[in-house]
Length: 520
Image 1 (spheres, rainbow, N blue to C red):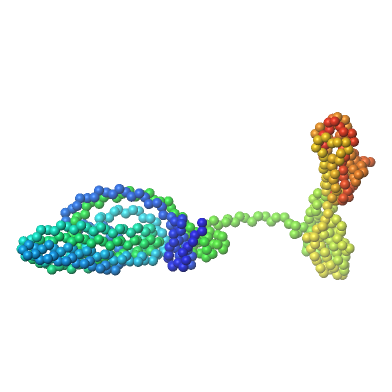
Image 2 (image 1 turned 90 degrees about the vertical axis):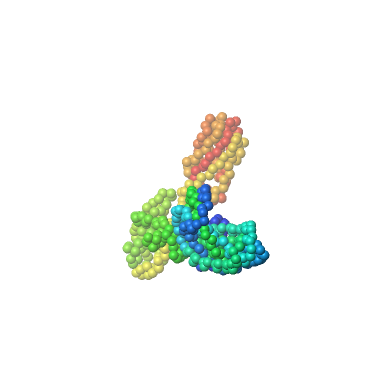
């Protein structure tokens, strides 16, 4: 189906068509990516059992740090909780911890880079669990009351985390962004006289995570926004990492689309296909040779032997034997009443100071006439001469008007069933001059059911009998006679009729056949 691409694209802009194929705008054409469709993601392995919470102590060794995007705009610092009132006697409760500031907006996704899809690397060993995330800023400590310490306040309820944005399509990873600057630590309140710690303030709900933009092919990772980072608490020892789940089966390979253009693609990758729309030839880029290689070059066989001279040479002028008032010609073949006749090369003498018409007859004789074309012959050449040589030479072989004679010209007729007395069973009008040989030699007539007695059909020309078709008693094949035993001629427009016997035979039926003749 047709693909409708976005209008006015920018360089390196990507587009996924309805078939799931990814295209990128190079600045002049939309070019299909070599990776094709991504195979289905393998099933996630079972999550390992979480280790027990270790005692609070040194921070565990961090796993390999993932690429951190550029730090977004500094989020606003959460409001500092109010200072607890100074108790008279007992210490007042500590003020609630201020709400954690909303994280800054997610930085804009960097432009998608254009690059070759690298081969999928093997799945690496899972890294150790990363550091525990930093808590939000601690609210200011309330002033120390005078007197007996108050009871410890209850821990506030944790705020509901924001919904995670939908994960975009994963493309080839871009370069790692710079690590963002850590947010400022919230100010610590002035310490009063040591009293009981007030209740921990309610933790502010984290701001919603910005939706991850769709990842294009080999583009720079967009800057990651983050809110102000609170003071880092001492992390407990991380539990043991669960076993890595089994890697899912690799999806099927994608398609390597060919670039269709009259010019070769710039910066091709190894194995890239290019179909030259000007020549209709397919090429593949072979990086080892830095060259476009034709995918199916034709193998040229040995040159065959030169064939025999064709019709252009037959009866054409032979320069080697043409001189003065002598015209030389190459040989050829003519049709002599259905029989091919070979004519050898030769020469003919021309009449001086005249127009000479050179022809070849059916019998194969090359003749010259100054009165016009020879009747019944093939025209070959029109040659005008002066007293010593040819002054005008016209090839006339394209104007053959030869009329063939003695070619077969047969007339057929008959009647189904039993004919009535003197019924005309066939009426035929002659289209051109012809002749039936004596006694209709070569003709054939038959009947399905033979006559009880002999039966004779009459052949008429323009109403006058010229011959007979005879069935003997019990015979199904006829014999023929012509009046006087001579040939019968007919001109164009003559009418040939075949008339049934005047006496009806009780059994004769389905008489039909062909009278054989030739053109004249």
